Image 1 (cartoon, rainbow, N blue to C red):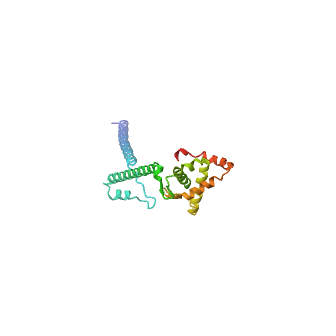
Image 2: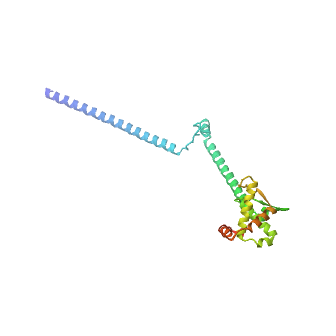
Image 3: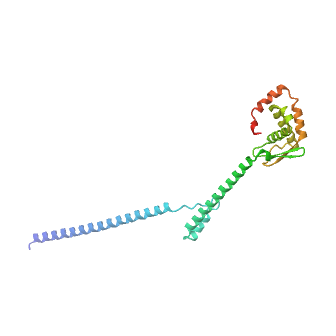
Length: 231
């Protein structure tokens, strides 16, 4: 074998070795690429599962005073009982809501019963005194108006002499006298009773008969605002 052939063979060996090395490097990088891609895929899957669980898990509210709620403490100490605690709290809230609704319903029913109470049941006669009980929304003027109406029922002849303007004056007269007796207190509690003596009502009637026509015309403005059918 001459020198040229040896060099050619040597060159071929080098080229073969180079090709083998390149093939190994390609295989190595191909394997590394597969590992990297697999790692990326695993990270994506893990991240997806983590965020999905985080979104689906219930948020535990903390107390504004101490930063930790009793539900959170219970969940951390007994990890097998969070569902039971949540259900118990839900049932408690529903029971409280039901109780509140029943209380409100009873309150509304009581209020309606008081409002529907007949006027005749709000008035009592004891000798020369007419006692009137306050209904929801009543003031002393409304009670004086009922007392006067009751007096007129007992004395129809006197009622014939009284116009609506006279009656407005009389109830205002009675109201002022009662407020004086109460040391200026005008407000009433529901069910509170005010007594009107027949002597006081008679004094108011006598005073109303002294009104001038001009004064009666002025009172007409107020008498027109009253629903007399409910008296």
